[in-house]
Image (tube, rainbow, N blue to C red; front, side, top):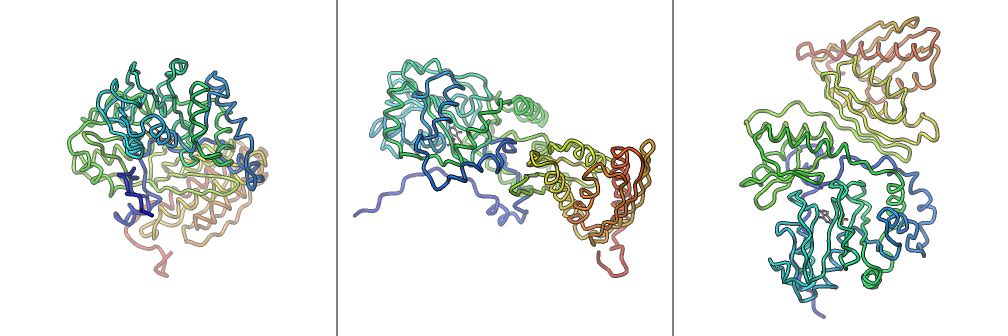
Length: 506
Ligand code: PMP
């Protein structure tokens, strides 16, 4: 028996834990701009979505996920026999190199393209050649990773594989080449936000699909992943916000004197000498970008994250300090998932979106009047009512506040405010003592106002007294949340460097 020789293999960048150990940053504060994936999963990627698959997880799916394959076929207007599923499109890249270029040759279009093609060629014992017209197998990366450009599809004698991992961002595809024998690769990892689920697919003529499938393991996609893929396909895909954010980020980068290549994807490529030096310079700020030969690649996330990237790049360029960081708190349970980003003090930039409309509005009032920058993104099991969603949202915001206060040194500590809202009047008194005590009288309560503030108090570790009354429950709650915000704005002011307690600690 001989041990196989190890090949040059795909290298993942370091994990958050590894980077944290290296830089001293908290793993939670690290933002990845090196994965070309969206900043958050789809709202439908929730535990409830996989509950049925989980109930049958002891079984194989004998139909090989036929409903998913049918939904994919319908999406592209092809027959179900033109679709094969795989564990990510990487599975097909490896397989197709073996099938079409064993001990032969592989070319990529453009030349500077996705590294997996070269590793797959090595696995197949194939050479990588420059001339696509002289290769047994040609991978066309369209749009291209890492440059973001949209190459033309060449006419070549070899087998054409058109990798459309990012095609949803470009709004173009090469499905018209399928009849002539091209194989199209697609993935759920990018625009659909399911990279961790590992689902991709190939579209090709039925005779090719039958041949490809005959070389696959019988069922390489898990039933949980298939359920997620089917759920994200059932809602319309809308990449317009990502595309708009990409253009904003590109313009801001140009403002910094950088020159990103026009992109058809969810990332930007900036040609430069020594990109690794930028990677190293940004890492201590928790900002992870990726260096390629001749350029830097940054993924487009969302406005807040991208502003952190821009800030770090500005600091690198000017040798200036980075701005005060946002505290990031994540909370995920079987019922809800939240990402909270908070900066105290802030400029009143507040966006709260959990789907629990009324309490999103209440929290927005609280944060705005407290003078915070707050962004809350979450989803919850609203089909059971708003209880879990509101409670977890308020708990996560409270935890973020607690973290951003650190040892609470130098805070004024006490704050008080009275706020009317038409006929309603609320009085709030707060003490950032570190002891979670809520004495609340909100009459009438529109439902969750008292519990929402109690939940916040628990994790923020503060004492809160509220007395609010009136005849309209909406007005009463709104006055209460605003009063809490105003009271916090006072208590959160800085006044020297003292711990404001005769005990010496809060
Ligand atoms: N093709 C390209 C061009 C890619 O950038 C990637 C992911 N980095 C893949 C394929 C693989 O995607 P998947 O997660 O589906 O394996």
